[in-house]
Every structure is written in structure tokens, then in C-alpha cells.
Image (cartoon, rainbow, N blue to C red; front, top):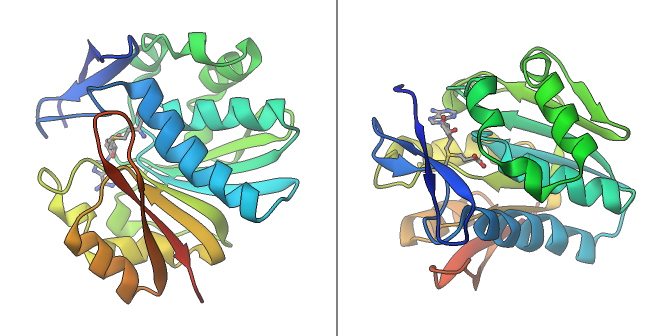
Length: 225
Ligand SMILES: C[S@@+](CC[C@H](N)C(=O)[O-])C[C@H]1O[C@@H](n2cnc3c(N)ncnc32)[C@H](O)[C@@H]1O
């Protein structure tokens, strides 16, 4: 993969553009507001509203800049929620590039410092970022991913199907959905007929949820069995 470069989005937060894929890491309408709306609020927030509990496990497809992790970790720290966060990332960014995103402004200082300090280590083993919050990143292609145990919420943040169709096949989706507990929540920023059919075939109840600014709808799916 080529090295991506930083570009501004409409809410003032930065994202990356990956020239080889021809795609941004987040919505051009606002990286911060997309991450908050799709993953933190429509994913984790929805799950916790239905299943209040003191600890959660999350699996993310595509750690990228770490924005979804950072916002989730910040929320967890402020709400005394224990967080075990696993992410898959085939093409890790350099620590230098991650440090240039400016995402330090969106989270408490200890979360940001803990993330940057432990960024490399998190690719080798589950790593404590700060009290009650751990991160483990599998440097792996989605197709090869395996993990221990099951999670409560999946953040599916792959590049769009038009650019990376192999990430959105039923087989690829099954590769992560097998690790979701019954009653667990899968969210992604996209919604297509193929995606809805795949998720139904994998045993999910699907819902069109309101999309982040600039997108009418997104998919939320709850695992039935
Ligand atoms: C839309 S971006 C993720 C954005 C990220 N969540 C963030 O907040 O910065 C998609 C990510 O998937 C990663 N990726 C691309 N192909 C992959 C594959 N086959 N397996 C695992 N990760 C992949 C890319 O390197 C990129 O970081």
C-alpha cells in the first residue's frame, strides 16, 4: 500500500486519503462526526442502552488512524466502563503519521498519550492504554483473521465496497461475525442490498439507522443466534 496523506474534512477534523485505493479513511463530510455517530453512538451506545454492563469487548475492522478506538476509549474512561478493544489492520500507519492527525484534541490527554506510547506494542499483544482499557491490533488481512473469545460490538470500517469489494463479501463478513455474541451489535457506515442480504444470511436482524451527516442511512445489525 502507498503511504496515505492527511486531508481536511467538512467538520474541521482531518482524515487520510489512500491513493492506491482511491478512498478516504473517513467521510469527507466530517471524520469526527462520522466516527462518533456511526460507531460510538449507533454501535456502542445502542448496545449499552439495551445491555447495560460494566465491561465491553469490541472488534474493529480497520484500525487506521485509531480515531474510533480513541473516541471509544475516551467514552469508556469517562463512564467507568472496562474496554477490551481488538482491531484488525493489514497496513498499519506509522506512529509519526498517527501523531499528525490532531485527534489529541478530541480525547483526554491520558488516552492520547497512552495510545501513542503503546501504539507499536499493541500490534504484538493486548496492551493497557490506561486503567481499564486495553488494545490489541492484529496485523493481518481480514481473510486470515482469527481471535480468542467473542465480542459485544463490531465496528466494521473497511474501505467502501466499490473500492474493496473483497472486504464486503458474505465470506469476509462471516470471518468477523463469528466472533460476535448472540445479541451483539454490528455497525457500519454503509448500507447496500448485498450487505443486507449477507447479514440476514448470517443470522442477523438488520435495521436501517440514520446515517452520519452527508449519508441518509447506515446499517445496524443484531445477531440473533
Ligand atoms: C476506512 S479505513 C479505516 C479507518 C479507521 N477506522 C480510522 O478511524 O482511521 C480502512 C482500513 O482498512 C485497512 N485494510 C485495507 N484492506 C484490509 C484488509 N484486507 N484486511 C485488514 N485491513 C485492511 C486499511 O489499511 C485501512 O486502515
